[in-house]
Length: 600
Image 1 (cartoon, rainbow, N blue to C red):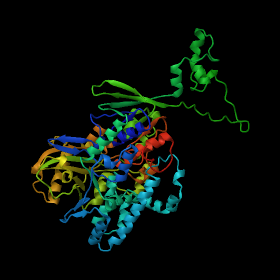
Image 2 (image 1 turned 120 degrees about the vertical axis):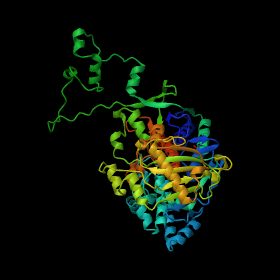
Image 3 (image 1 turned 180 degrees about the horizontal axis):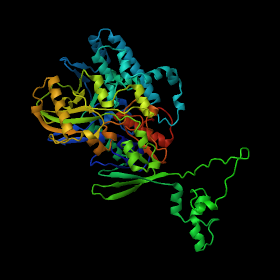
């Protein structure tokens, strides 16, 4: 049983089916995809969220586990430029090229002398990326011994430095031009974090865009989801949509056995009269003396005195009996409100982990209760804006970033002040309350997929996806079509549209809009059940990365596993695909740190 039909849920279901499991996926929404869903109107096809195709080998690996390949399933185009950057009060855009050599020349042209330093930075990024793939990304961290190998131990001091220094600081020691520092710091946003609190270990992300380049799947990320769904269904997966899970059902193994057959007579089954049964119930006495329950009431008198230690004379502490608890299925409501129960011996929750733990399980069965989340940092939320625009917009590349001069204060407004150390202190309950607000103007992101893909917009029109990062706060409101969203959400959207028009030199942009829809933090909270309305998941601070991040198995309910951006290895579509594979490794008891052999 898999809860959630986003990319991680679909990918996990497919791999489980390849392993021989009978798999059903239940999804709250009427369609699959989750954050990577699809919205269509008037001939426009909008990817609902993710739009950067990075780490292509991870996608290809999942497809190969399923007996296919990325080349067989997708039509991938390499973007050139990979993306464009516009800076506040500057008219010259900076285009990031499709090759390492061109990007080194670009950095050198903007800051003489930086080319050589950037070559070293990218070499380090590539080395760290390969090390992460070999020892960290594909590890369940169930056993740390596989990590204690030569390549990791040899680089241990360097790895510690990369964990303790912020990405911004590390980038600032490589380049001095503020524009280049912003380009190197921006990958922190992909991780749901700030370059000031993200460990510099994540400079490995620069290897992905500046070395490898950026790809795009024709048909958009809706095609990626469609292909994963098709492969999973072909493997035998059943998908049920419009199914809102209300509870993960659990039971004790001994209780299941007791229900299946009547108990054999025991030494405590004796004839009783009315007086005897008013003093103590025979079933309660059996449970007490056999260690299945604590003595209560008159039963206390029936128990023998505890032994004392022969040397100290002290009574040893009594170990409370542990009753095994195991998953046995789920309960859900369908679109009509009718209740259903599905039995399962394995449940994988591939949706927001906080929602699963705190609403689907009893408090005593929660591995990650409310007290855990009170110490953690949510990634940012966002106002998303889907725009259909008449006419062409050559001023924007496929991907365009708009960076403000108030870069640092923008991140402080979204996350609060503090660097790597502050994030670590918060994770152990020593952080200070954070005050957040919406940056104005904001450093925003615009995707124009119609620059590369004619299928996403009618002929003669452009498809724009705009992301404005804001604090994770559902109180900011929800979105809607044609300006019908919450006032603050629509005001943020209006300001972003005006900012794009001014910075990119498209003065009539607002007048050319024919389709408009917004999404706000309350939509993420209500539609996707995300923690605090975050658009991404827990931020990749030091205290929420690698083995510090929530694990992918319940410590209190056997047979309950986790996948998706809330758990290891983290945020992003490639990480979600890896999280699916980590479920298989958990089930196998595989403690290796490398990817599984292909095919599964």
